[in-house]
Amino acid sequence: MSGTGHEHESHHNHHGEEEEKRHLIVLKVGTSTLMKPCHTVNMANMGGLVDLVASIRRLPGYQVIIVTSAAVGFGCLKLNLENRPTSDQLSLKQAVAAAGQSHLIRLYEDLFNAYNLKVAQILLSRSDFSAKDRFRNFRNATNELLKMGVIPIINENDCICVDELRFGDNDTLSALVAVSCNADKLFLLTDVDCLFDKNPHEFSDAKPIRELSSIELAKLDVDVAGDSEWGTGGMATKLVAARTAVAAGIECILTHGAKPDKVLRYLRDGSENELMTVFRVAPDDMQFA
Image 1 (cartoon, rainbow, N blue to C red):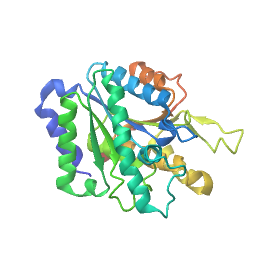
Image 2: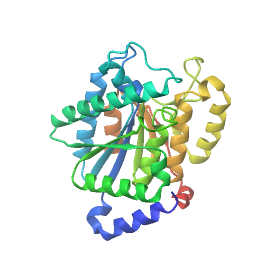
Image 3: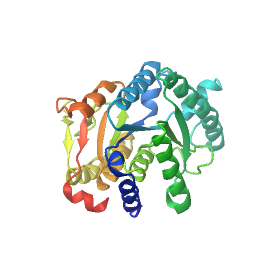
Image 4: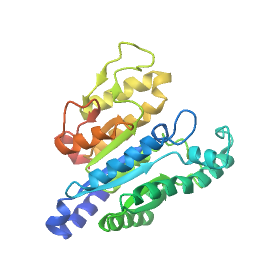
């Protein structure tokens, strides 16, 4: 991955001033945002996400990539399954994900059509990032889609990934996409407003963490991982994703997926009044990009 930044930089310079003004935003949206606890689609959140993307696209030079989860959840709905397949039912889980992915992308397409915006589906696996030819093809195709004004919607290729559904609800995938495509910012949209110094569900005195440097992020990652219940949950994978992005010089923001207006306000004026966690890029981090 280390060489990709230089290749992309020369690609930028080739296209002159207009390309330099591009602002690429990656929005990662998790199952907890797209699905209700009762396992139905959260249309309010999906509609809010689509409206957010449309609003970002109206900002001068802004482009958006969505990294989405919820194929399995949508598959359960489509196939009328009362219970999600368990971890030891891998083939069933992959089949359900395949059925759900088409349902998921169709809903995205219908919602974006209302804004006259076009979408494209991209399914990836871990090996696509390590195989040079496949990685280059993914990056080039994504750049072409963005140039045409199309919104890439990326998910993991659940049907063929042997160790899929252990990818942290696509947190890691979103960071790899952000780095590969030389994004400016990565937003992790989840079901909490921000990161806390400890599990707010267990500790009433948990305090919000609004900003972290890369050094603080590395230390916090260790602290969180030390608590087995809190560390093995969804927040641990988000910290790994944030560290990956920040190390490549990409600012990462964790915020509530049901409150998309906060994202838009942050992009417009960098409001420090918003309750979210911003993982800052230090000048020293840029050497790793």
